[in-house]
Length: 107
Image (tube, rainbow, N blue to C red; front, side, top):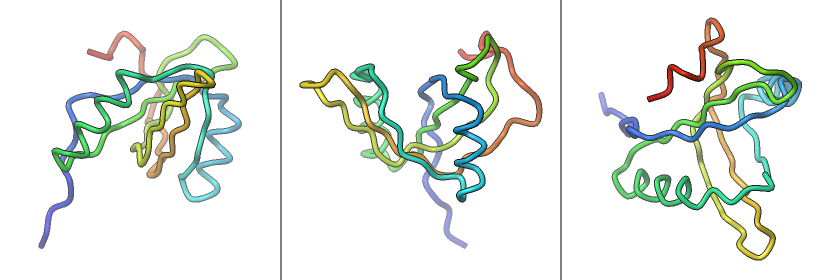
């Protein structure tokens, strides 16, 4: 039995409206998002993970309220658009945490 890519020691944390995450989960746990932030370091770490044959998680907190971590997924692509100061990323494997986890649990 072959093993898949290992998990990166790094992840990206971001906020997304819960309704958008629920919709993505209903659509098979995949999505593509554009944010008005440049994930320069995140893109760097994502490329490093790819070179090392690792999967890089993205952790989501709700954008509509103050809250902890509610979903996680794995990044498929990360593209920083310098001209527009945006980042577009795609993910798959969206999964809800069994219970909301505090952001302070990130290390």
